[in-house]
Image (cartoon, rainbow, N blue to C red; front, side, top):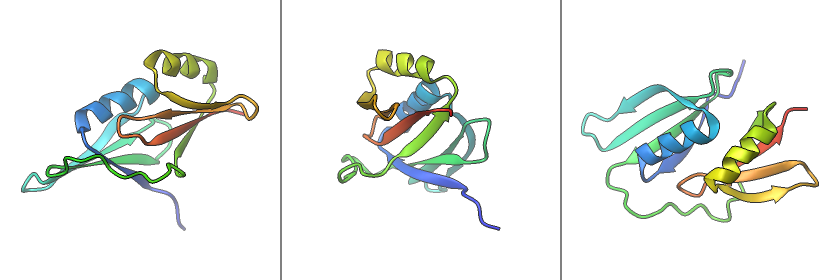
Length: 121
């Protein structure tokens, strides 16, 4: 058997990213790891519904933003509270693209990663 476990985003400001994911998507820390020499930290976030986790990797010596290419990759969240999340994300100012024809929109996190919001069918 094979199943998804987690997906990684590297982040510059770990606390800012944790706060964003908590506020924007209600994700909570489910586990943490820190290198003995404190050179990196791993924070795993979960949705309290599935076992899938988003891993945030923070590297102590990294100072410049990550090159995300053309942002052709993204995470997607499905929700039965689509309108409520849309309103919240609009208020947060993190919506970067809307496709009303498809009924979806994208938000961006503090490091520029795109997250798709999909209404539950």
